[in-house]
Image 1 (cartoon, rainbow, N blue to C red):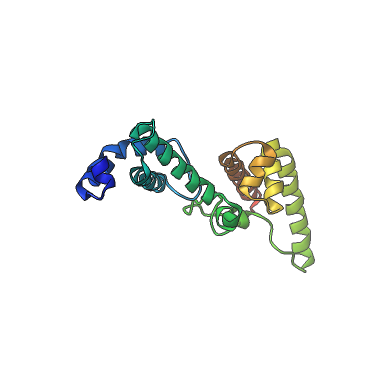
Image 2: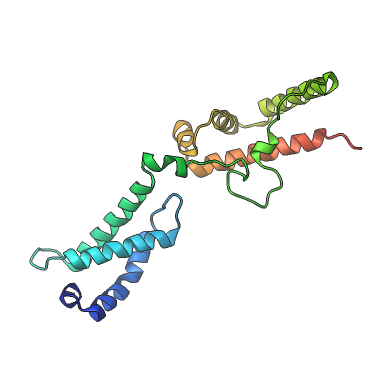
Length: 196
């Protein structure tokens, strides 16, 4: 440990290699919005390096305990940094060109499923009004309470995090609810298509 701290590269490499599985285990119990497990492992390794740099053997603690504290703090700091308000535009961005879950293989997005702008042709206008009434009826009767509330908040421009907080659930539950809404809208539209 002291050799690594004093600049012996071989000792530092050996120490880092020895604690890599420990860092992986620590990182596996956390989640980083917009990142993956490798990002958290990298943050944990930075924490381990800081532990090597800052460890003082004259204090009444073992290196392992100190390293665990440094690794955990570094990971939590990374998570807090990623979820700060200044990163909100990046973390809460919702694209209409992809589904909310980012499933690019889908044929239709939520934006595609919502009704478009009106047209001045009276025949089209009447048909559109009927379609809209039908869709509103479908959404009013075919959605669960969570789906209905999530759709309302989504259309008002709320982020997944805000929706999750207001509806007292996690963001994955919100995403799943909006995916179900999208499927129901698409199914409804397909059932109303006129065969030619």
